[in-house]
Length: 394
Image (cartoon, rainbow, N blue to C red; front, side):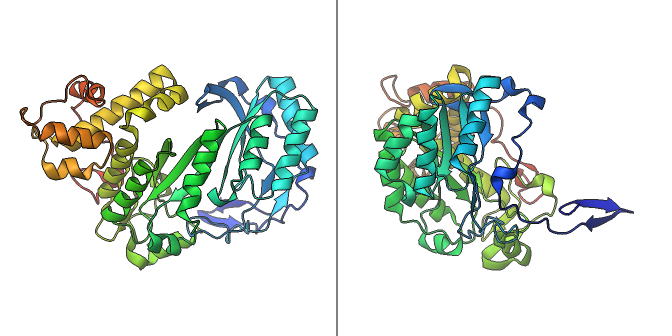
């Protein structure tokens, strides 16, 4: 059987590249009855919903350097018939009672007619479901979103990655920034949760480029949520080749695939940035966005009171470490580096006549965070094996 890699006498043996599956409708429906379906839940602004994944098409026509599309030959697009997709949705609802679907297509709105026909069939079948997916910001059209919402769309994700022009050229993804603002605005108008993804540590990254991205996100009031992941040079990607060869300032620190994680661990150096620097910038991004009080309610809605509160505790902890850095007071440079909005109010408070390091008054929008931080300041920021604070390259 082709498509299998196994070990024989300690050596890897490959049976070769499997044949491309062109007729996706010919594939059997996943054997969900073998899974504990009731245990799969996804946090959304409507609470934690029982969900399952589903695919309506395969492939992506673009060739971003962090994706193995060329190695896996996934630039060729293949689609399921809308009827096949909706029949599977109907089966899931009837057998398991699951009514939220995570559409795993790389670009859900790539072919407008395809997704609209799926919505028409959802309505014809009377399916009361919700769904979400990912797309490119320049493929978000208001009339399409309005139609998708009627059939159950509740969340849409975009890959912003960075705002730096040179890094965007290098990673081969240059969707104009104004499309992200517009896409978030359209989602807000129709009550769709918009999630913006950022990658930290792409070729050419510096502290300044990361903070430029954070500034863009803070100043764009349309943006309610952002996710910060450390860029991982997965094997088979152009990014991996650059990192292995030490090109464009990126150097791979380990070939241990178990260390290839996007959160709390980094496996590359980028220019002068160590793995621990990348983790620190990831935490800074998290704090920069979610310290804004007007973003707290969506966080609590998405993760529940317990999960959301724990995330706010983490924000407070990281904010406390950033402000006071273990020495009991905040320097002007530290305060300014945190950015605008709520952080600006902390700066004004710390520079006022009250003693340095004293928390703002209860009327300040940041006081709750600092109150939580007072009980959470012990312990270092999370770090993986390749990002230990005392040994960044260890």
